[in-house]
Image (cartoon, each protein chain N blue to C red):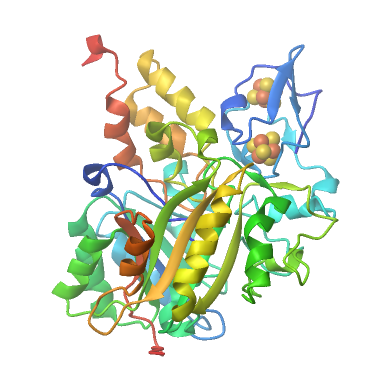
Length: 239
Length: 211
Ligand code: SF4
Ligand code: SF4
């Protein structure tokens, strides 16, 4: 984003809104650090700027900078990666899509979340070891299209700063312990950002969750909050 | 993506935070489902969500009307609402069961309570997305009490600096907790932010003489 210097009066009311601290005021004018900006669009949408001084210059929609907007602005409709948004519908429609079936387990590792942001290349701490282990990353997730066949981030986008991106994949349940341990280990090498870890799994017939004892064995804490697909979708997928 | 997941807070605070997601599936049951989803929004609106909205038009918290949200539905329509109690979510599930529309229903919140509600209606939940916390460079994160606010917007729209600014203004008596809760939630575009839960979280910053 950019600030129209003619309009800006340097009041600083916009400063708290930027999630990346990318705006600063100097000599009574606001400026945006273009390296730090993730093109989330909050500064344009917020209503406290008395002069409506923020605007989106055309280069925001040019490759590779357009990647920032895809992974940062939830109102974004432009499809520069070929896939809308930051991930798939994962558990939300799993009762009809069968994306994650019984006997499988889905992983969603959201780099940059919460609050920190990330360069695209940071996902490699986990994508490269996963691909080495033969894990296939979700093709409908926009991050996957930015990786080569080894799990490395493509040169043209690796330095782009984004709000967050999700490494998404499913593995057979018998590989769960091995892959969870791999992620656990990769977290130690994640030195420049954070990731939020989600797991998608089907309930067993008796209403239990098979992943829980494995996580307990690995010493991974399971917070109380979760997202439950209640199972009212039709046609119902019972795979 | 899972932007309703990874909310943090005390058990008491999270017991006032349930998110409903009704989602049509592309290529499966999305075709012709706009009217169904409009009916869903009408029916769950009567139960009293504390926030709702859509990426397309914005949230009721920012002044958008239910009619505008319904008019803005895309070809893959979705309803997202936040409720401030398990009882309201129970009532929502009862109504959705009665409607029997065949559209996927997902509830984000305290898992055991959601499973209990399902059991009460004889529903076997299909699948679950477990939140397994934050990993990596955790020393970069804001303090836990700030994180509890910012994780109410999984898209990352609520900045730590806005939360801090709102808290400072409450401390200085320049905003009431109610006003700060609305201002803080204004960047959330999809309507997942829960202002009713934020108010008591802000109350503790009110200067002593105002109590
Ligand atoms: S687009 Fe987002 S990151 Fe960039 S200056 Fe505006 S608020 Fe900050
Ligand atoms: S709020 Fe608007 S006028 Fe004030 S400093 Fe920011 S850009 Fe300039």
